[in-house]
Image (cartoon, rainbow, N blue to C red; front, side):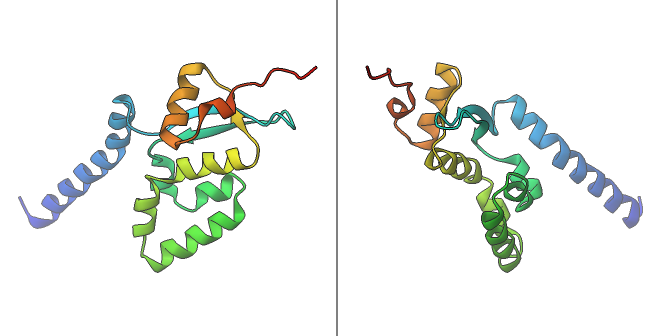
Length: 138
């Protein structure tokens, strides 16, 4: 086998692994999980995330940009350029937790099933009692 064919085979295997790995890990339960969140003051519902962000891993600073976090996107773009992309790999482990924490700071509360709420609260490190609906004061 000549050198060109060998490198083509290696390239194809690399691409297959790159495409298949996220799918395999997702099937095994590794990766982002969704949690529905609601802002009690406005009634607006958003999706929070927790776990490894494959979306951020592949698309980097575009993720905060598309989620409406312009300042965060600009900082992430800058850090990705300065670190030659290493930032993007590191932040893939942290971005979903940070995003959901920012939603909580903006007044959103977990609004999903009790099991999902519990997992999200444990992963993010927040007190789930804060997210329970409060009884109306008479």
